[in-house]
Amino acid sequence: PLHSRRSLSRVSVTNDEEAAAKAAALNARSEAPTIFDKIIAKEILSSIVYEDEKVLAFRDINPQAPVHVLIIPKFRDGLTTLAKAEARHGDILGHLLCASKIVAEKEGILDGFRVVINNGPGACQSVYHLHLHVLGGRQLKWPPG
Ligand code: TR5
Image 1 (tube, helix red, strand yellow):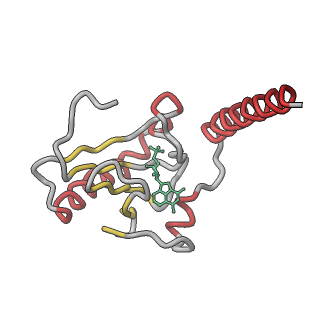
Image 2 (tube, protein in one colour):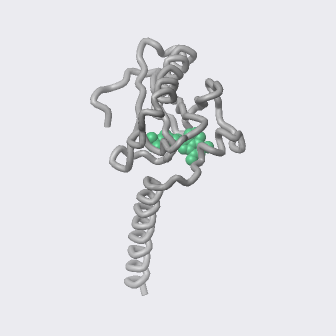
Image 3 (cartoon, protein in one colour):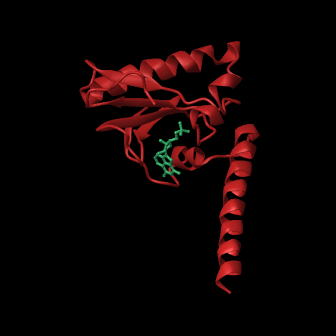
């Protein structure tokens, strides 16, 4: 009957939400490969903006501004999140920031751009391979959401 179908569908929505929350929590702790490994390996095509021996910069698939580029270390070295940063990561972290300037210059947004790192579930991080978001090409508002 209708009633039980409705409760069934409610149950399945709840299960989906629980499954998504569990997956996000697991991901947040996990050292498992991410989609970015496939992008680095070029098994998945991306729109590359800049690349050197240490980092890869490519356009975000779901842009939040006219310019939205992600910059990632090619070797994650434990940096699933910024919260995992240790002294040995100083070189790559500096390199990522320098790359953000190169990307902003290439994209013609040096006059107004934002660099964002979402850290952990509380900041809506969804891919557990450290990445900088470089955003610009429109007036950016403050505070961010
Ligand atoms: O939410 P956080 O800070 O973790 O940012 C992850 C970003 O990766 C999001 O802005 C997504 O839109 C972006 N993303 C996710 C995928 C993807 C991507 N950007 C480019 N290409 C992508 N592919 C092929 N697959 C994704 N799942």
